[in-house]
Image (cartoon, rainbow, N blue to C red; front, side, top):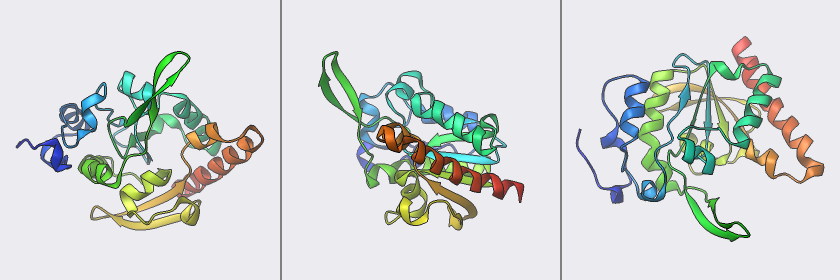
Length: 219
C-alpha cells in the first residue's frame, strides 16, 4: 500500500484492498490522509455488528471519544442508545461511525484550564475521510443509514444537503455505487445543546425520525 502525505487530503491510499472491518480498523490507526491526525490521541473508527441492519453515521469523534478510541461513548452516545431503544431499534444491532475519524478541536480557556472544544470539519476533511466511510458501507451493507446531523448528510449526499429540508423521510439515493435507503435527522448532541424548555421537543423529534428507520426495517 502506497503512502501519501497528509497535505493531499486523501485517505484512499491507506485503505486496504482486502479484509473485513478488523483490517480496516487496524489500517485506519495509521491514517495520515489529512492533517487532523496531528494533535489527536488517535483514529476513532466505527464499531458494531458487521451484519448490522442500521448504520448510524455521525459527524466526528468528540473529546471523550478521542481519549477512549471509540465512537459515541460520551453524553451524545448515551442519549443515542436511549432514543434508539425508544424508537424500537436495538442499539446492540447497529453499526455506528463518524464521517471524519479524527477529533477536530480548538482550545478554550476555562476555570479548569484549557479545554478542547469541537470544531466542525471542513468539506475538504470530509472528502479526505470519504474512502473509509465508503469501505465501511461496502462491508456492512446496511438496510437503512441514519444520517445524524448536517455533516453526516453532506458526507454522503453532497455539500448542498440540509437536515431541515430532508429529515424524517425515507430517502433512496445512490451512494458510492450502491442504492441506499437513508433517513436524516439531527445529531443527538442537538438535544443536549437545546434550551431546557425545548429539549423534550427536540428529543421527541429525534425519536420520531428514528421510528421512520424502524418502520423501514419492519416493512
